[in-house]
Image (cartoon, rainbow, N blue to C red; front, side):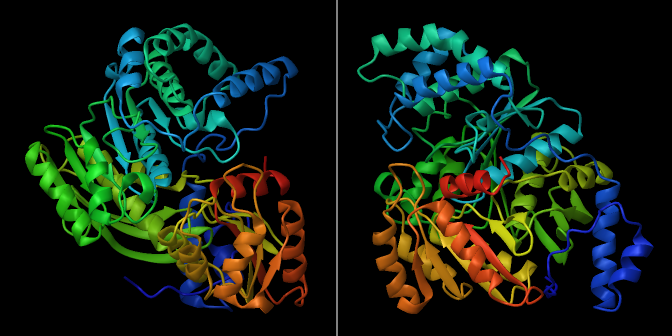
Length: 506
């Protein structure tokens, strides 16, 4: 891997010509100027970005009213953190719906971190080869409709409402037959599978909600199972070691499938490999059968060379920050190659131009996403120590902030100390806050832990998120306008989503 060169984020027009960009940047660093110019040239010749990643509320008042009614009905069910671990209810729903999940092939994704970004990349790659896709991911950043996507765009609010109304009688039928009603997540999963069958899609890209074996999504028989990096999260439900968590997540590996295995802790990898042997699945491992060959930072992202199952893919522009996103890209590429039978059945590569166009179109809201300049405000949904470490490394590499202010609001069931310790080396000061949900950790409780990690003089408490954002921006602006201070909002997908709305991105 080549040594990254630090550089400030540049929001210049990506349609500038190669020569203009080189002339503009050469005085700073001639080598970096060529890299940046190349990245913008690739973007200028890439496909359009994936469809609206985070939709706004419906403009039509009646549609908005109907969507809110659906949201309210769904909210009355068990939330995503209350579980009865089985697939009995979702299987019953699939049965009365006519098994919609069997109407199309699928790629199933589990892991601890990187699932949604990897799903978006897989979706973009499949779209580039003119396949109609359905993507199901969770949680959402701002709008519930983000969870169900067709051809790279969140399902329209009208279609979301129609899908709910279509399956509602069947949901109520299953509710009446089961000891527990279908949960919020189970109903949404049923909606996604029904919407994909109705579209119809050529392939579904499905992210688990939690775990694998008993996750509601696990009523599909995917030919490709993807396992992103496993680390400690949801330990009260999945296990207290990577191996225990891997045992639960390995449940998505079906007989005869191909397993795309990201780099894992040794004990987690051993569990996955054992499961693959038991069900006669083929395994492709990052660092062995595929991986990242090289990467360089570039304006708006990075240039990577990936080694796939069918060969090497050079000079791919990825408009996302951080080494972890390059590894996600390698996993996504291998998954799509496996879906097309490359590596096991065919010895060929995918079309490099299609691959470049697909990756250049990828969006991943709330993942080191720049939402404001002067000062620069970045959002990242890291909510566990491994995610925080990846975000800290990514922001340190891609931005040369002279001083970085953190705005952190977490859920109360997370390893908060571990998350704060991962950010401590890069935050000059931290503003602790809380989001609006019942799961949010109280700001004062969070501050008590933050003081132990950062020291009293580096911690400020602002229970309201809007006040916390204002305080952090003020701290960043205390430096000279050109000194380059920045703000990172993190700690929870919910915190990031609410910040995104407050900063005018909703």
